[in-house]
Length: 118
Image 1 (cartoon, rainbow, N blue to C red):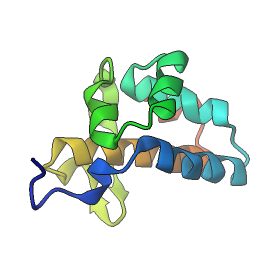
Image 2: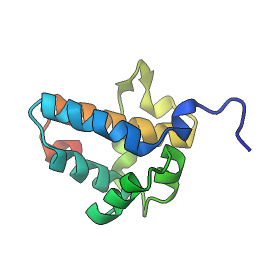
Image 3: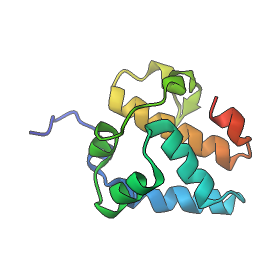
């Protein structure tokens, strides 16, 4: 049963948002491969597992629930995304989604991969 206060992004399919991430990367001169690398770094998915998650159109909740492991350095992802400090987000799933958003933003802004990966 869905909680009444659950954010709608939790039930959005990862596959519906992924093309927006790709477009953002490509507009800023980055590649889909770099995007996939950072997603796999954060979640522990292999490239093949990531593609399966996209193909099966899982929602964000399932995407993160099925992730092999959240990278141990994910907690080092700090700052503001969508006007909210990541480290102050109480909902664990929302924090994971915002980690991903922050990594995508950092890549799009030209930050080098080694620094994005912390």
